[in-house]
Image 1 (cartoon, one colour):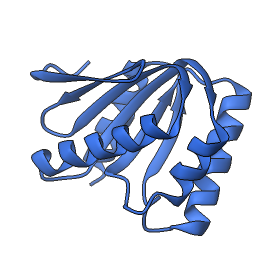
Image 2: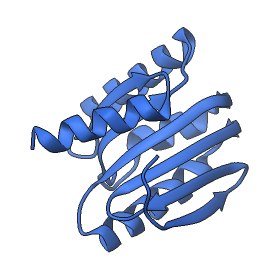
Image 3: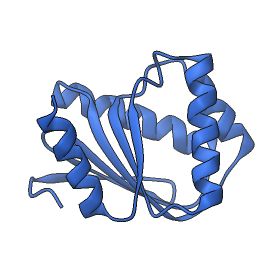
Image 4: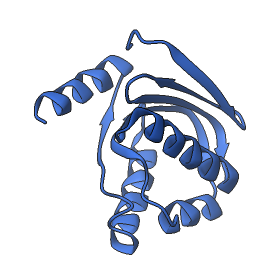
Length: 139
């Protein structure tokens, strides 16, 4: 994991760490509702503003139980660009990968500028870090 000072934020049952200069890591636990997505997006924007650049976001979703229909709709129709250059989804099974792909695809159709990030499914935080390093080196 990145060795910078970190800031911790709890949003509902979910936990997030912001690492200077532009890394955000989250662990999702249980259900994700509209308020969780709204608060996470707002926190991400705040972190990106402090970093002065878009974020690389790794999110461990092994403890994710569900994303409510209202939360999926809100995520797709969110009225601001997400503050991410790239998102690494850690520990996803087939059904969750399918759901994420559907949400991102729908978001790309509805709000292309809001979904202007790369994403990848990975097995570990180390794999996410390696991918982020690769993205940085490719500029």
